[in-house]
Each structure stands twice: as C-alpha cells, then as structure tokens.
Image 1 (cartoon, rainbow, N blue to C red):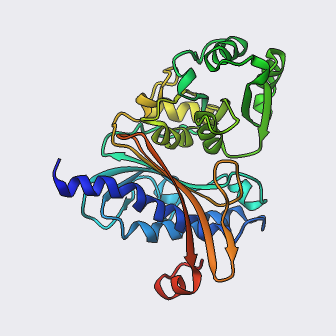
Image 2: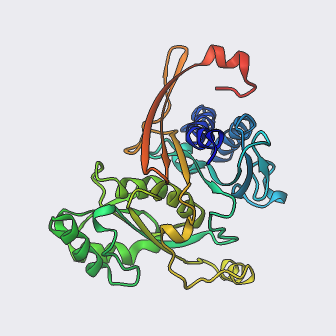
Amino acid sequence: MSVEQHLTDRNLALELVRVTEAGALAAARLVGRGEKEEADGAAVSAMRIAFQSVHIRGTVIIGEGEKDHAPMLYNGEAVGFGDGPEIDIAVDPVEGTNAVAYGRPNGLAVIGCTPKGGMFNPGRSYYCKKLVVGKEAANVIDLDAPVADNLKKIAFALGKPVSELNIFVLDKPRHVGLINDIRIAGARIHLYTDGDVAGALMAADPRHQMDVLMGIGGTPEAVITACALKGTGAQMLTRLNPLSDEERKNIEADGISIDTIRSVDDLITSNESYFAATGITEGELLDGVAYRGEYAITSSMATRGRTGTTRYIQAWHNRKKLATMSSVRY
C-alpha cells in the first residue's frame, strides 16, 4: 500500500463523518414537525453536497431507491469528487424517519462503505430477520434456534441469568409472537418504534445495557450495520424475510437466495470497511443535534473494519460561518 493510499484510508472515516454531520444538521431543523419526507429530503440534499468534497469514486449501492423515484443518492448514482479509490456506498440519510418527524429517540444519519465489490447488494429486499450480539456471545447464536435456546446460550456466554438480559425489539405487529417468546423465556424487553441500526450497535457494544437485538428489520440497514460491526468481533446473523408477495418475487427475479443465512462477513467481504453515524434526535447511542447560540453541536461515531477502531466525535459548528460557505441551511 502506498503512503498516499494509506493516508486516504485513514482519513476516509473522518470524511464520512463530515457527510453524516451535514445530513444530521439539515434534518435536525425539522425534528418533531411531523414532516418525515421533508426531513429526509433535507438530509439527502445536504449529504449529496457534502459527498462532492470527498476524494473517492463512489457508487451508491444502497440508497434512496431507484433513479426514477429518488432524485439524489439513488441506487447506482456516482458520488464523490471523482478521484481516489473506487468505493461502494450504503447510505441512509435519516435512519428512523418517524423518529425524526415525531421527536422520538435514535434518529440517525448513517453511511457504510467498502472498496468496490466488498458489499452485499440486497437488490429489492427490504426486510430481513436479524439476531445481533456482542463479541462475547458471537459464537453461540443460531438464527434457526428457538428464542429461549438462544437466550440461554447468550446469557451463559455473558455470565448472567436470562432474567438480566436486555433485548431490543422493534414495536411492530409482526413481532407479537417474538415478544411473547422472549417474555416466556424471562428476559427483559425494550420496545422501540424505530431505529434498528442504533439498536444493533447498542447490542454489539458492551458499554450499553442492551445485550441482544432480535426481530425483523430493514435489509439495507443490516448491510450498513455490518459495516459498523466488521472488525469488532460482534456478530449479526440475517436472512431475507420478505413481507409481501411482491417483495419475494422481486428478490427471486434479482437472483438472490432468500433462505441463505448471512453473517457480518457475508454482508461485508472486505476488511477495509467504514461506517459513520451522526445523531439527529437524542438517543442512547448518540446525542441528537443541540443548539447553543450560534453553534450547533453534533455527536458522531466512526468505525474502521481493518483496525476495529471506533471513534466518538463531538463537534461544535458555527452556523453563521457555515452560512457563508454552504448552500445548505443548518
């Protein structure tokens, strides 16, 4: 690896944080306004502009949708300054649009990326079954095992009784059976309306009280999460779980196996992966955007798969100065 390439690799994670910061700052102005499309649009526009200064030849693999339905950050769009390494990108400008629209916890702006060809492309799959744990329990989980069996093995690996396990579950009608099984097993359930990226990262990090994420969530979000977990030793097992006949037919037409169980290493095959996230609304993973006079304060994290390093970054943005330098309204 050349010195120039080494410096590019080291700097890319921080450059991606600048992009997620831009998205979070733009969306934060609309927190609690009940306008999720507007919040998402503001973040998309800000992140698209911020990408222009990043020295990569990027391609959006997972973005806002097909070109005909998404004016920016659509699947297949080229982003970046146009020089530097070829990069595949998964981006969710507002992960948890309802969380942002209604002022709920864990709204994030997130990006995951790998060198070209290093990321699983889920095509038109929107939902998958997920099981996420930290490093200590990474080798004991089984996506096909009964809930109670998994929880017993996880509890043993963590050195605590099942009754002390904390389980993150999205509060959705599809999880009624799962919630019942967890309760029968005796574990503690934490229900969230949105934010399974934040939930997965909390489950993977022993500093947070969450021990496990279970349930059906977004497939694009799973790939982004895998970028964050790569190199940490944490594990996520997934299997596509279409919730409609149309989604199933589209997945089959794309030639993607529905029955295959995919781990972090299956979703992200390159060790040189990167992840960045910035909080939009207040959350247990990251603080939301806060305002102090002329400053906007952001809380972000950045990870690099090769080193397993996670950085937490607080930034104070002078909005008056930004207004003279950018067309984005912060």
